[in-house]
Length: 233
Image (cartoon, rainbow, N blue to C red; front, side):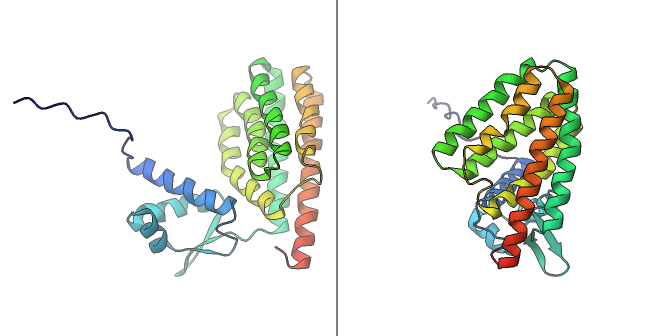
């Protein structure tokens, strides 16, 4: 009696590393979407129970999130969503200016053409999301634009560092709510950077990107400082 072969599985079984990364993504999304707020404790047993897992992968995920700056550990107390300070935000943007300005110069010095379609697509996406009034996804498109600059620079270290601080940047933007009164401004502020890259003008590209991130740095820190003074953050 012959037996029919087992059907191909719909889902691929996650190995240990894949499982931990999946938990990292789930917790990250909860933080960036505001379901876990700064100061909230990551209850390993509760998260493990909700996900149907043991506590080990949840603990490993929390350690990775600590390296990314989203959570902090306290001795004998566990992990907590990081409290964001004005000083931390300012330092974060200072680091971004250093990395991304170097990346855009390297990108333009090479061949910027392969990067242009992706960069243009992200700006167009920001415009569409502005019309849809979807600030969280618009922030993701914003970060994707900047990541592409690092990616196409050809220096993998730029991408590695950018990925380490991207979630922390998104958290700071999520906490202030909206960066500009006119949501279309987010897309518009990227146009000079794109134009300079397309023109293969490294000096102009660096200046445009430094101005762009520097302006965001001032706006974000000023808004966050006011929120702290008002007790809203």
